[in-house]
Length: 329
Figure (tube, rainbow, N blue to C red):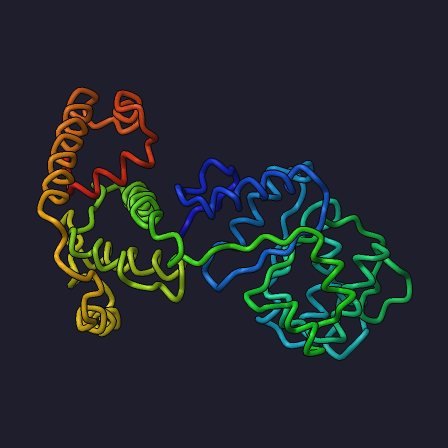
């Protein structure tokens, strides 16, 4: 559902963690080096790989993707290296492998930790020598491919446990980028949701939907084990189920209601009641900020970029504050 990210400025985030990640991705994109992306499932490893490729000198060549966990050993070898006609029963024609297709471009090997030891050896040869043999072939094929590998597993621990080749690990781990889980960058949730709802409205040619404040509160409390991928699926499901322009809790997938009940059942960890003076000062400051934002949005007819300029804040910060004060056009 999420559109491919081919420019770094399209990565919606105001998180300090993600800022460091983006700066690293920009640096490695300019250099023809091997990159290892680590992070939980759904944290955006493929999107990061695409951003690297489309900002690199290889951007006009092929960007090839394979998920190593989706194939058996035999099928994965066939996909990676191809085969010669007659090399096995059913090989009626010669087939190009993905390494051959990716020549001069970028090859993204997702979930490389699930690759068998036998295939790890073959991959290492490609990385070291730039050559490989098709199944049934006798003539080495030369390729020039940039490798970006990714895994949701701790490859270093796998090396220590003899589950992943040490020489291959150090070959792919020239630059390692750790993508943070969504639960550690919750300040980005409102930005990511706003971005996705804008996309859905554009694709469906309909008014943009908004989240009920109760839904946003739940989103901020939920741990998102499936990360951005899970959140995107939840928001898309809710947008489909909602007939109006406002998404309520009842529009979320049913399995999330159980999670919500558990969150609400937890005792509050906020401690004693805060001092009234401190609360009063904060409320006064919030009231002033809210009025200024409303004024700026009114003057610019809800052009968020222009309003952000008037307020001398970023567009991302403005969107967050609009959601915070539940402002509607």
